[in-house]
Length: 235
Image (cartoon, rainbow, N blue to C red):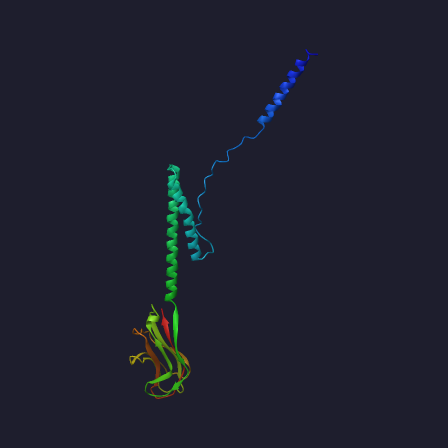
């Protein structure tokens, strides 16, 4: 029996060793998790569909604020060909974004200036009233104190009067009169017995705050009826 025992133990030990080796070889090889992954560059869209100009400018400025720290980080790290290439790319992106912001800001300013130049302001002078005289008559219910400095950038002013003659006889006139300096500006006229707007040629006002009124007369002394009058300020 003792002589047979070695022949039984040897195969058992061999099989046990093979099983242990198989278990060890089947375990997965671990990977060092400390391997760093390079951070990808910030991707900046060339257009921001549906966004206003101010929103687009804000978006571009935000992109620049994200790119600049990346550039500074690469500059302070060890120099290499790869890093120099990345720095050049990021600096180029920042320059491009700044140029696009400048274009958008210029476009916004031009649009605002264009809008301001095309605008119109009206200064009411009064409404109602009538007169009938061959000489100039001032209307107490018409007037305004105007300082052209309050309308910076204006190009011209025009007198607009809505009036008529009671009877078609001669010509009716209305003019914008400077009470402070005792001088007349532009005037308008009509020969119609129906109310209609009459507009004068363009004029500018002398500097300073001055009082103005509306005066009327008719060549035949025919009654004139006024509906309203105003000053049109164009920019």
